[in-house]
Length: 293
Ligand code: ADP
Picture 1 (cartoon, helix red, strand yellow):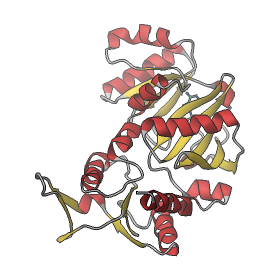
Picture 2 (cartoon, helix red, strand yellow; picture 1 turned 120 degrees about the vertical axis):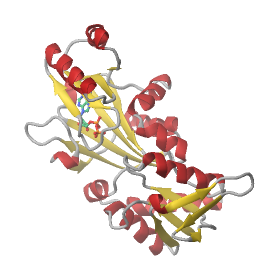
Picture 3 (spheres, protein in one colour; picture 1 turned 180 degrees about the horizontal axis):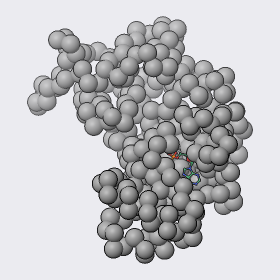
Picture 4 (cartoon, protein in one colour; picture 1 turned 180 degrees about the vertical axis):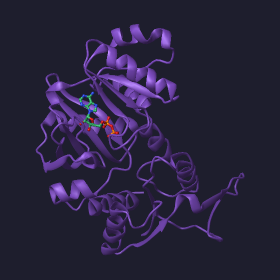
């Protein structure tokens, strides 16, 4: 196969591993910086150029689109789709996953459980908004944050109100959630490929921290998921339309809660924690999809 990875940086661990796994399995693999792809749109005249040359004949394009280039990156990805290239995660699904509010609305409609979440715009409504959520502690998070930045724990109602006001003052989009204390500062990262969980790890927050992100000093270990956790992870990816996804769950008294679904989940933490060759599993999945047309 002729594969392309849409990634801003070919030296990133995940990008390098996908290149390596693709080549080991006998494919031609090329990394394309989405911001260097430029496109032509016309009926019957779609094209993508890269550094002065047309891009064509790729069998599959694997998006690894970061938060900063999401709008442009997904437009390029969509162009590949319109030109008939197979993509494991379509542009619409990547955009859906990037927006936490939209994802949670879709997941809730599909009946998947999550920490109760509220959002609101007008300062006059803050008190009732907090009442709709329930008793503190609360977690206030930026809608488009990642790696735990912009995720704040407020122990008291007055603290929630202050953080909400501060975020509003910065014109940031945010959501407010019930704090799931039973999770005890740990979450589960379930790596879903093609409708099954191929690797899972439990991340535990560093002492004095409630966010389990590895970038925040959390530690990871392999974990065996319950049947309910596995089903929840697979359904969450499927509801958003992602074939490759990192689904984060919290263990709670009422069962697994979906925290978020990541469309470009990192490979480093999960491969190190579980010893699984997740990159090869992604490439193998794409091979299967292309073979069956
Ligand atoms: P990001 O996308 O920035 O990683 P998350 O929503 O995943 O943001 O939150 C980061 C971490 O904070 C999670 O991995 C989890 O450990 C913790 N966390 C987030 N929301 C809650 C919550 N409602 N209750 C308990 N812990 C939470």
